[in-house]
Length: 90
Image 1 (cartoon, rainbow, N blue to C red):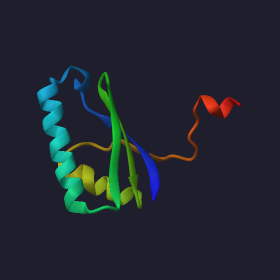
Image 2 (image 1 turned 90 degrees about the horizontal axis):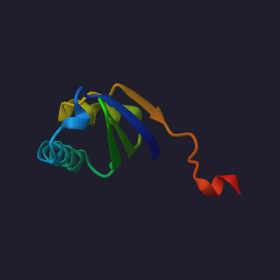
Image 3 (image 1 turned 180 degrees about the vertical axis):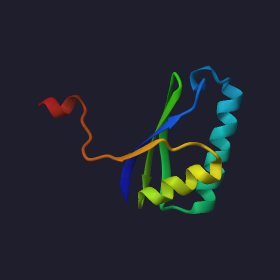
Image 4 (image 1 turned 90 degrees about the vertical axis):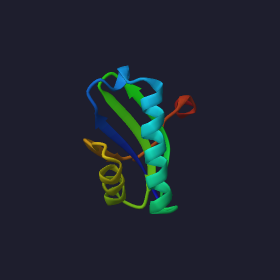
C-alpha cells in the first residue's frame, strides 16, 4: 500500500465548529469501513480554507472514490515519496 497526501479546498474549514468536523469524520470513517481494509485514514490537518489528509491506500482511485462517497473534494492527491523527520538530519 502507498501513503498519500490529499489536499482538500474547503472554504472556511478552519472556522468549522468541532461538532461539524466530528460529523464529517464519522461519515468518512463509515465509508472507509464499507470500502474495506485496503484504504486507511491516518490523520488530517485543518488549516485556513484547506484540509490536508494522510491516507494509506492501494491506489489514487480508491482515494477519489472515498472522496466522492463522502462528498468531499480531493483537490490534489500526491503519493508520498519519502518521509523526513529530525532524525533524517543525522
